[in-house]
Amino acid sequence: MLVTVNDPDKPTVTPIARRFHEMGFDIVATAGTARYLRGRGVPARSVLKVHEGRPNCYDLLVNGEVQLLINTPLGKHAQIDDYRLRQGAIVHHVSYTTTMSAASAASDAILALKSRPPSVRSLQEWQSQITANATV
Image: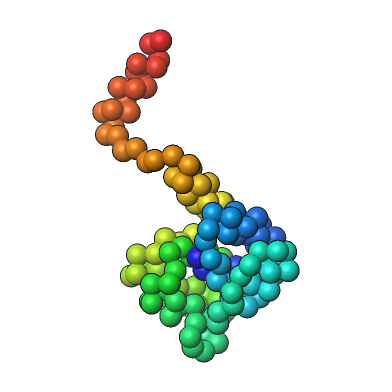
């Protein structure tokens, strides 16, 4: 997964990144985020921002090396980088979040999927179950 967050979000993303690491995700982050995470015991490999040169985080998306992007931009360069990253994520079918609450929800959902097999039901099946439970 790729993590690139603004300074105010770094304390919030740390436990989220830790959970992803514990689930087996490799963490790649832009320099400041990687340094922050490593300083708090979360292994993270550094990658350049888009405007810093190549190979950069956009290249990781294009090369299929990223399955999840957590990105909360702040600042002029970040707006340009953020646009490219979001565009790259969409084009290359990479899930992404732009808020800490969504990143936390994503980690909870992935953990739930890992702990039990997913089940798919039609809306009619859900309604039938809800109706049956309501009459008991």
